[in-house]
Length: 509
Ligand code: HEM
Image (cartoon, rainbow, N blue to C red; front, top):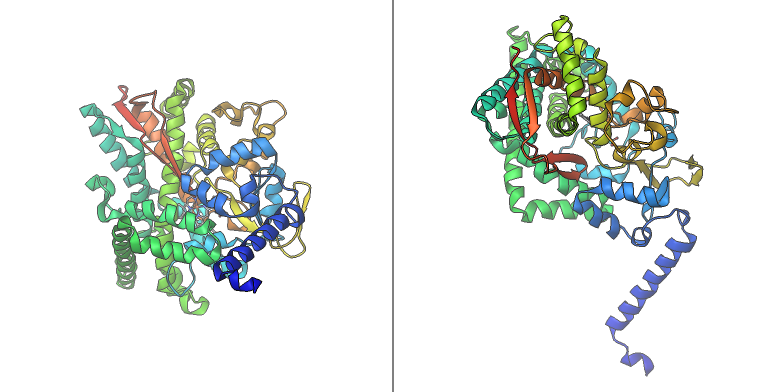
């Protein structure tokens, strides 16, 4: 009789309550990560990480958490972030490899072949594939395309020259983004996309990323059973998704066309451009069948460059220039160094990469820009391998997730000095007391670490070391309103907007 009065809803509610209570008790008192401190909500549910990710300022959240709790912080029931510089060599070891987590599944494109180096979790497939193309991305190979990058730098500086005459406020963040996109076009598509020339985001290439980054980043931190649903419904219901989808289709067509055209030109011996596309096509022509490197794989390679290589490089250049504008003494010192090199005949215009990297103060400014604002502002999560691992003095059983955020570890005071939170290019010339350069270098993980280090690092470095000194040599830039800070949007890539500047041509020329 008693049970007749209990409705199905009451039974369900009671069962759920008992389940949740047991789950909370388990997470807090019996879970292998129970001793790791962190926000209460994070220890019992992924709601915390999803909400924080949506805000787009994860680097601030994680820095504050580490300040409060120390090297290890629990950010989800099965997930920990670490800020211990010594843990870099453990988590991103090339010997005992910690695989990427399911966060990366959200980034898998809807094709049936190899999804690209970035989201692939299978280490064996990844290392086989990377071995095929690694040489194409070596510095020697990238520098064979130096003239192609120069053509973009010249166009960029030419446009800045025009702006300086008009005394117009310039959106530096937008223009640096244009530059980085056009370089990818030059190297992987055989010609610039034309965003600098047209002075707008033609074909909405940049819009695609504006939509994709938050969608995939939030999708990536959702429980895996919800991720696909979330991404699918975002594409279905968001008005900006339709524009992005259209643009993504155009990029797909543009990539296939570029690859096809280049194949034809090579066959007809009409092509002598030694860019990245050419080298990828050559691999296909020479041994594609033997190693199963198809035209589809070249398309994936070029598309990855669009998605992974433009915003990241732009974020690095923006940070380097923004910090210079905010620190006039450093800006002046860099100008003096660059002017002296030009006078001595050791720096040409267009700037050669091999000349630029010999300038110590420039190197300090580049490193500081990327240290304080790494382009990837999220922890790069990995799965603890079979047998578990000791990380920062604590044992982690296999299967749990752990990772380091470059935007946290690169602020470590023990490694970079007590003023690690401040901009100080000198630290790269004369390290603060108790710090050493080799350790500082090892802790700079803005390009990742271990077997999954950024494949495009040399492309970006050559863009940075060519554009920054050329701009400083030819122009003086200053913030239009120094009281206004840039805006940042951290959805995996930590992009900046609203860097409004005045630009003046320097008079010595
Ligand atoms: C300043 C510019 C750049 C920065 C700061 C940067 C940063 C990174 C970081 C931190 C990773 C590691 C991600 C992880 O472990 O989860 C990575 C991986 C990757 N990056 Fe970059 N990147 C830059 C430019 C580029 C460029 C220009 C390209 C392509 C042309 C590129 C393509 C890739 C790819 C394919 C991966 C995955 C590598 C793998 O797993 O084998 N990146 N990048």
